[in-house]
Length: 171
Image (tube, rainbow, N blue to C red):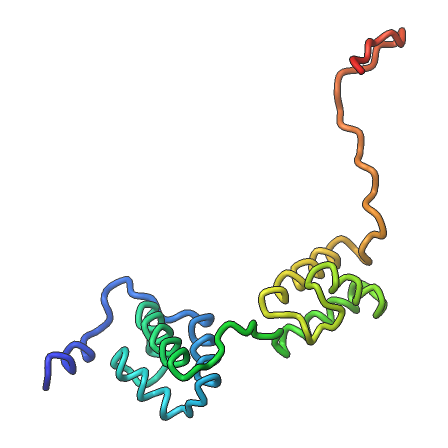
């Protein structure tokens, strides 16, 4: 058995964390962009990290695998800059929040335009999807539709007014 093979059979270092769901998801995105089947991905995973099952990756190994897959993608001319679009799960959640907020289609389109720069939910980018969902959650917690205009600010407590009315105003 080579030193490398022995190294891979050792237990993970104490305190080592498993790869995050976000890392694993991004690896799957890169797998699709590179048109790798599961066997091809397992081979690259084994070359880079010494494991053939994604779920066995540690955080640092997943980072190394992501770097390798991105390098291969660039070498193959795969566009990695295209922003991934909103997921089906996010679309479903956003639509349920829209219903809870009692928003019309026109109100929802305006809401999307304000928060994501588009009027179509399916055109929202993955990064903007989180912002849209957070804003919808805030609306549902506040009890309804977005306000047409912000309410006037409440007066802040301050010193009592002079009952004689002769306070000098400096402007």
